[in-house]
Amino acid sequence: MVRKVQDFIEDWKNESESTLNIFNSLTDESLSQKVYSEGRSIGTLAWHIVWTLYEMPEKAGLVDKIMIDKSAVPKTVKEIVESYNAASKNIADEVKKRWTDDSLDEEVDMYGEKWKKGFILDSLIRHEIHHRAQITVLMRQAGLKVPGVFGPSKEEWAAFGMEAEQ
Image (cartoon, rainbow, N blue to C red; front, side):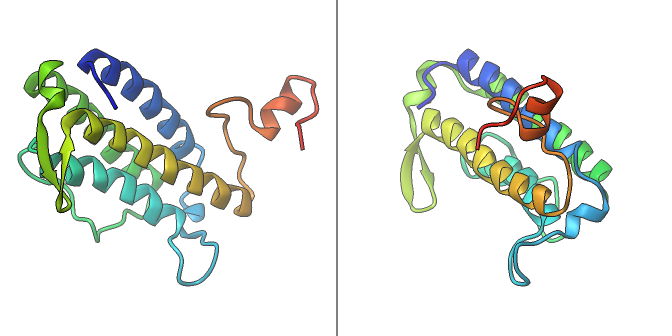
């Protein structure tokens, strides 16, 4: 659980940069890549990440209204990146403005449960990491190079002159 606003801001900055590295490695054509016909596409997963940056904070009282249409999945990487940048910056700004270290222990109604604000921030980060990982699998299937996030990717190992671990 996040216990200090500044810790969240620092983690959020790092995770947002990682998400943007993934998003910026996508192509417009890759947005339709799915594992199976009923599954989510890269574009749908990316848009879900963006949507959650409004939906979860809105439920927590951190933002006043949802600024995007959940069903209007963009057709271009550029639109996703622009929307993500705006939402990510908004979260950091609103946390700094509205919440304090002491308020992170306060409980809020979330999805039929009581969640501490610090847990909400932690969940927001973990949610993004989870779906970002799903996107990287789809990127491999689409033939895209995957940037390293928590260590080098297969392609980055090769650039270092080393063999990727199996």
